[in-house]
Image 1 (cartoon, rainbow, N blue to C red):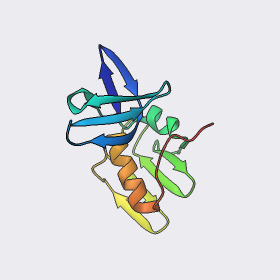
Image 2: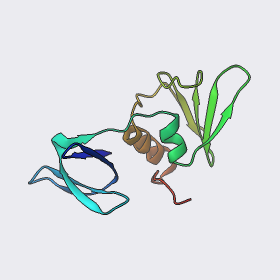
Image 3: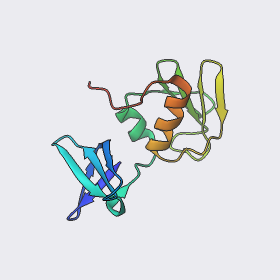
Length: 122
């Protein structure tokens, strides 16, 4: 997620929720910060986001692009086109899932692999 405070955007991992105050705690590269939900923004699913999540990229002869992380695969019809993706993990294959943001991919990834998708240290 992205949190905005005084015009500065902070990318971070959601670590805690405070339902009473309607706040979310994001762990950033600096420290943890609390943000109200009206100052949170999703991260768009694109090549940069996948590479940040340590996916590897393979361009195919037909123009499609495959992104891999272990046995998990995402295929886009062409470079930069994330409007119509396919993803699979072992025998579980999903055609055109409604995934446009990183948090949606994280939910699908966890549902399919039972592993949390986070940015691994290099």
